[in-house]
Length: 345
Image (cartoon, rainbow, N blue to C red; front, side, top):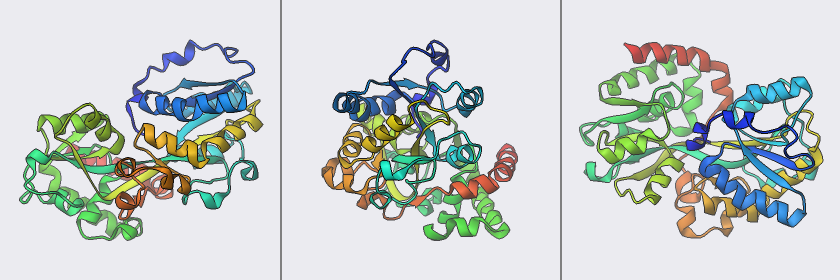
């Protein structure tokens, strides 16, 4: 999950006594709008309904903190929000408890990829094509239009990394969304993606922080940009009119809840995760922030206006593809090194 929450100062953690929430369930999230939504939709209602004191604190996503707790056998966190890239590695390294899904949820009730041995997918967010309607002659549809600077003049905002840009380049070059990772897994596919990036390079304005794409678009610095859907929605809610999302060919991924190995409250933590994955709490969260539910039944509880802003609603997710954590785990280091060298030329 990409939000301004990751800008929260890590020093907050050092101010917390390890005994501060003794006897209570401690949940950990990225703070910001995400943390506020979790508190309203999950933390407070669970505490009220269960009678279990439940507290939420913030962190900046550093797995080193979790690893240090586990290795010291002094685990003071019970449920921790992590991104998909941390799930497989953390489970393999023994940082997370194995989940007993018989006590949590029926895996069939959840979207594909949400139920893993060590982690429960709790919501969906997406990297999308965002644009400034005032600078576009017509509505763009997908990455082919993003690359078409004649039909859609103006600069393009892109995050300064290989991940997702190479996928977008292949889709712009005509690769079907379902075939992107198959093609990108070949040397020929990698060369094809970089050649397509070469075409757009003179028109790219790089971004690094999630807050930058809406800022670039509102200022008219770029006509289109890759962006996190939550960032665009937040800027729109603040009254910025020169923003829109083209959902075609977006890439989505999940954020997960894990239980650090050695948590003294594993059973209670699993009860909390079970609560979070029920349809009503899932729907309540989506009403707070435009991140989609992983419980499929929750989508049926949401009105049209809410669904219109979610990455995995029927109208927005029909051409979307999931991020391949496996691909980027296997190939990420080499591709990022090559991309960094390419961008510097």
